Image 1 (tube, protein in one colour):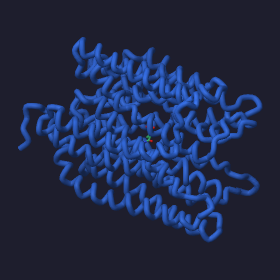
Image 2 (cartoon, protein in one colour):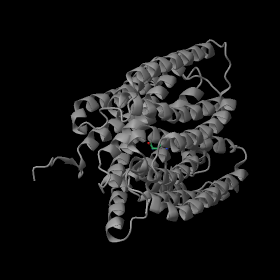
Image 3 (spheres, helix red, strand yellow):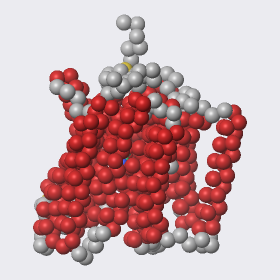
Image 4 (spheres, rainbow, N blue to C red):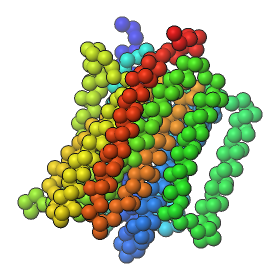
Length: 501
Ligand code: GLN
């Protein structure tokens, strides 16, 4: 044939550009994230910031929450002002600057660096995810497996980040914290170079904003954005000078609530004022189930870095012969399982669709949520051994992480694909921003849940895990039942003219 025959694993070639850009961005994100709490709690002698665990954990929660919250304005800027291509480019540049600032050994600039990374990620993360979906036409059956491949890139990036930044951090004599932060900046730089060089493969996807504002509207928006940045800079300056006291622990709780409210308002605004056709409304209804499943999923899943990390450190028998497995290794099990299992899941969805019937987005997400919950049942039993004073074998955590990863693969790449398929094109960036906000809500709630766990009261641990598990299973069942109805909505055509039969 005379068609464009070059493909990337059977997918449009543009996927390669987005795959590697997101891989490097995630390398920088996860590499830096792994250092964050350790750096903040390390003493001044250890060249850290010497913060308490409570403050550091709250700052960590606020950071991971804000990173994804900024996807809302980031998606809007792409839809209305810049288009996806430029949003990703400038987002990446800003992220790189943030990591460069973090690499400077100075306490005060540290927080400025974090804020800059937050702003850049908001611009990059939702828009790169939305552009993946725009590589496919509405009928293209490769979309789900395209997202599965993209998701593998995300996790290859996190393996790279953990390995490189982890190594530089450990070797305090030759390298240390700021080298590790610097490595994150270099990773993002490599991603940007690669993006620049292979931009042509996108064949115009994201070249223009989907629903551009008028010239006057654009000018007003940039002025407003500039004003907001000045306010942000002023608050930051006041806080750094000690003129404004911010207590991160109490802020975190308010933030969890306001993000949830923000999610509801934004979603309702698109639904009511977005000039949607009846079909588009039903499709948005189906997506709401996907978003709720996602927020619940990450609230449980993200315990990995907190309560399960402590479980690995304190209650797991990590001695194999004379070798002690480092606590941090358990953290990379998830990314490793993802990379191993992704091809299997990509093939599974295609074959289920061909031979049997494709389960639909809502159903897959509900199953993902329940599989994650079953991982916490494993932890419930493990925690009972721990509560009775025993150390458990490492297999318990391995089994939990395995179940969590299987759940993640049923839900996370599937949800990305659902958002890209079912949202109206003119809201592509913003809907991805709304979806990424469910990461934010999940991350913060998981932090608050883990905060209930007191290392000196291990007897409470089984209770925490069984509650998370039962709650997730309950929500999962409700979503599963509703999904049998919403499956019909998922299959409605996007055609503006066509009216639902
Ligand atoms: N691992 C996924 C990503 O980085 C999801 C992150 C999350 O916290 N929900 O894109």
